[in-house]
Length: 364
Image 1 (tube, helix red, strand yellow):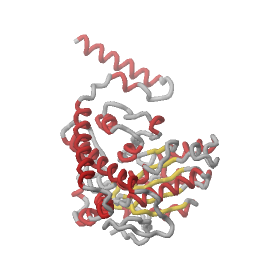
Image 2 (spheres, rainbow, N blue to C red; image 1 turned 180 degrees about the horizontal axis):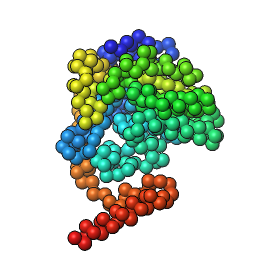
Image 3 (cartoon, rainbow, N blue to C red; image 1 turned 45 degrees about the horizontal axis):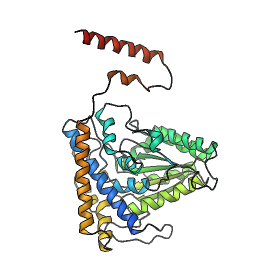
Image 4 (cartoon, one colour; image 1 turned 45 degrees about the vertical axis):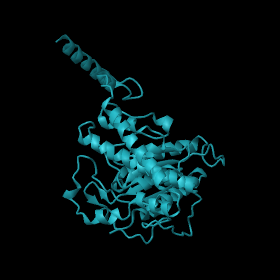
């Protein structure tokens, strides 16, 4: 069982504010209500996508059920000029960066290489290879540093990068190499690890005998552990780490302790490797419910507003279903586009082979 003694927490599981000597929150009620709306809609997005996969409309889906606070809290801490690099589960980050949920589905339907314009949204596309993008994020952060976009004191220019990954990625070589480069070059990057307790079927306790945030010390990186189901704490901790990065104070590793309520992906059966006891425990720590309780006690979240958000969620689900089922079939030749930055003889040979195959099918 995860111990919460040394976690940064500003809102406990019963919806009560917690005083913390190192972190406070200047978020007003309107901002918190916005976080609540975000989490409600992102959960609906996730549930609808899971249902579409079960209906055969998507090839695969990686659920984010239970991890909404970590993603919304950190995602809303990003500034417009910042850049995020995500795994296959950061649907909440994509939401925060303005990606249309219908467009998110295109990748999982298997009809496009990438669902959105990465430079427009300042969000790298879904990364399937575990931990590989941590090096991309570090390299981009070093590039921003060399380009003079760090430590200038200009809040509209100074730039930071966030690399999102799970606890399983902490055992990957790429992530540890990224830590080394980030520390050595004082890169403006925040490593945001969502410790959801399970790397597919491997529990975190088998990967590390110490909290994952403690590993930061060995690399010369600041390590912070936060309650990943507390959206306020996730926001404040990430915002502070991003401010440090933008001002030239270097990288931070944030371990957001949360729980993957659903399966690893829709091809996984979690009942094969875990019992229901932890599931029941973590349901009492639901990130949406604790914020709902807090906002309701303050009379910020009324029945009318809750009903409005629920209606918005229903409309979102309907739009996702309609959009997904009306995706046009892709041009078979499009698979050869944008594979490399320039021409490649192997790709061109494969392109010609596919053209011949299609020509023969057309002739028949």
